[in-house]
Image (cartoon, rainbow, N blue to C red; front, top):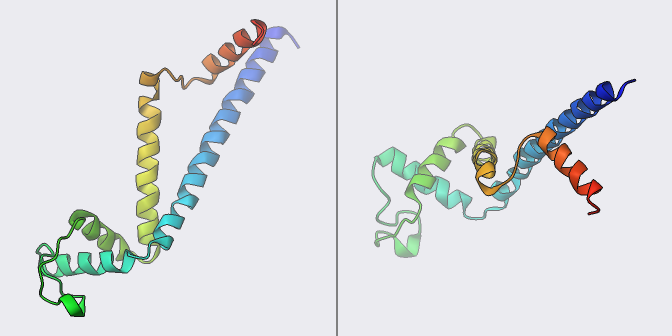
Length: 139
């Protein structure tokens, strides 16, 4: 084979390797997003308060779930999160897991989108030529 075809084969394999790595990373993010949802011990309270806010179309201002504090003022720090969590929970137990995976995926998308402003390149070709230059310079 000529040098030109070997280089293009190498570039194609490198591009495929980068795509496979990205895919595996996305799969890892989706699978790992199940953990925080299942390990959260306050999840039931958040869902119950979200359900109450949806049912009563009002913010949760007075405690209605805790018997010793029944009727006392309550400070709800996460009303929007609780409503969204309850709506995700309506899909089933996997709803909050899917919601967490979507949020992680969106954050990863923003990271990749803004990586160039921090000096990171996204092109496998640029990465390959940068590595080639650094190895020739003795790094």
